[in-house]
Length: 167
Length: 417
Image (cartoon, rainbow over all chains, first blue to last red; front, side, top):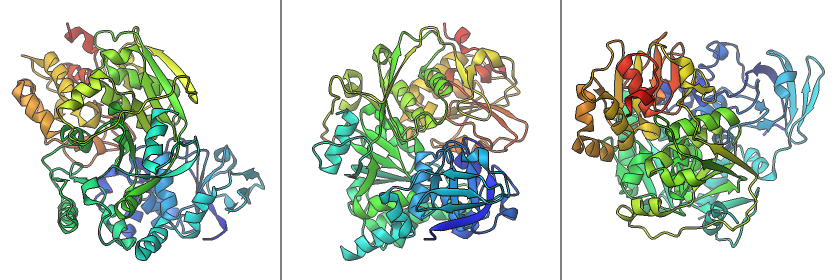
């Protein structure tokens, strides 16, 4: 896992639900590459054209609310999201994303400090967030040891794989 | 301790747990639906060979029942093959309906259990004093491999419901009002308990609707202390032994709210957010192109019965398509036996297979741009039921049926004398 994530920001508002992150009509797709093509399509149809691997998503409160569909997290993992920073996350999305190894950073009021296209740098260990375009700084909640262990293993699958193989 | 904490402690093999603690719990039942072929993929990606305990898993084909594309058919086929290979006997195919209702119908839900499903509306099972919570595919695959899953012990919030429901006002209106007041992110990571004198007047169907919708304020789980109404309902259905846990007197909740329902009017969540809740009367006269009655939120026998009461001997408005989806096979059978389906179809309803149907915008009633829909389901996110240019109003089953009759949003009370 990269300890420092740096990328340009894509900014969304409050209550971005998983239907907007990954519309229901694509739920039957199973290949992560195909799933990734529809990331954020319900919120911004042009997102896929502009996003580059390593870029970060910034949102207000309750990012990922609604359906439990893991495809929402898979889509963002598949396109290589560097991190997602939000005032708060919905719980199932939070679990899904961490399980896949996506750094989710709870950073109160971050949404007000970043505009689309700003360069943002996040230190995942210290929680220090810098908007390199404006110079603004913010302090995110540090990740818990439990979550950090999953992220350092690039998701929960390698951890369980080890367990399953040892059993 | 709270009953919810006792359930977690029991499943984690601990005497007690504290708020914020992370506990690894044995899961009593894991349920996978047909949107989640990823569970099988994640299972193999974790080097899973045999599932930990095939008797503690249910696979249920409800979101795509029956398949309407080749890809859906292929996914369901892979589920059937997986269950056969793994010796999972609780495979419920496309004839069972929505998982949350079908599991209850089949006696799989009981107080004190930990029920985890790949569906956000698993909070529904708090109506039975179960710890029900939704997860994604990879979490479910962890359960398939290990039989366990980690949880953070949640803060618990108490909602006390007082008063009596006026005519035309239902549990759905109550929970919509609560969501509107507290907003969609109020309960993230929290457990929500319902209590208060109103519960004595709410049947199991209404209690399921309350608990079901707590996921729309972000809740991790919901809880209603089992009482005689619960136990009467479960007695004939559940074969499994169970224990009813209780909450210590004086337990300190993270927050407490009291809602009096006696003056409540029918409510609607207006586009495009479940917490954009207003009195229905503010929207009277808005033309409705599709009225959707069904799902795990609003497709039980009691819901269909109120619709039948409103539509008995009448015809729906010619502008409106009225789609009726009984929540489950059990609901359909009972609704047929009681003449409810006859009444609704005679009134002009389009009846579709028990399952999730158009609720998640995949099939059986997709909305076109510019259309208005009123739904007894749970969500009105942009594009949820089809075009992002469609507008969705979430209300009670009675409000849906009354709108089908008039072709516009209208107060259902006048049809319920």
